[in-house]
Image 1 (cartoon, rainbow, N blue to C red):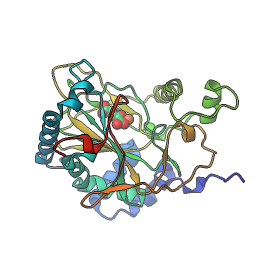
Image 2 (cartoon, rainbow, N blue to C red):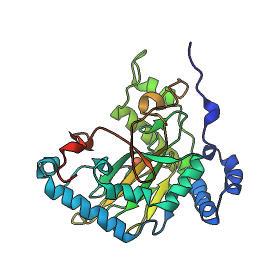
Image 3 (tube, rainbow, N blue to C red):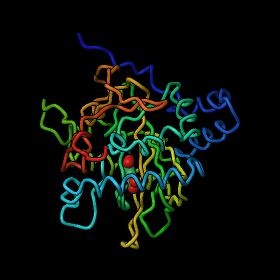
Image 4 (cartoon, protein in one colour):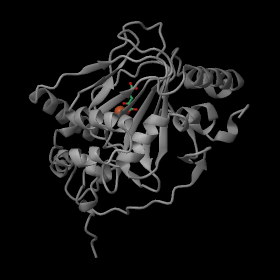
Length: 316
Ligand SMILES: O=C(O)CCC(=O)C(=O)O
Ligand SMILES: [Fe+2]
């Protein structure tokens, strides 16, 4: 028997008509102010969310890991002076987990909006700006029920116009999705199952989002941050990385992809089939931190190229 998707379980922050009721339930003025900004613009910047010393400790730990593990880090530069984005370094660096666990206001906000405890699904570390074009994260973090995902991005050093800052399209989180099934049909032969990932499908969806932002007259805003500032974004917020003007500069930053505990995460297979039922609970293995849970993935990964089990890292 085909299960019906539980559309009634759509998170309340997906519908603007719920905003006033959500804000009325905020437990403190601080959370209310942040939630208000988040609901109206699709993101909120929390200034000095973690002390600069915590950011320095994370960078120092990363540099030590690099020195202790040349066999892992040198090939990962792929012949260039740059690493690709590094996935899940928090598995081997407790200082990275601190950036999440001690980010008190960002966690309070997420717990409040989820109505549940936020945990880390995956993380990315960037040594340099990503220069990633405008996109929504939802095709890559498609939960069931849908949209139970937030991005939480921590600046480990100052980010300005020159080192590839984030850009966001404020209020773009409210633009409706295109007909996702039609999009899949346009690209896939009939009866072919939607793959988890496909670059042409990803690009077609993101192009639709970008065009919709233009049609609605939404601008791309640069987000300039100081060390320790943290931005939390809505699952549907269009965002990306601006061009790097000064290639000599780093843009050290960590982004956590956050979900409520035990939430399954799918990719395009579920995102482009919103009416298809998928299991709505997942018994992830967790690595417990001091206070929060982190999904225990098997590998630290350099983009999609190199995979290393945590036990391969010396000094870990
Ligand atoms: O850090 C960036 O430049 C973009 C990161 C991003 O888009 C993400 O992690 O979802
Ligand atoms: Fe993203």
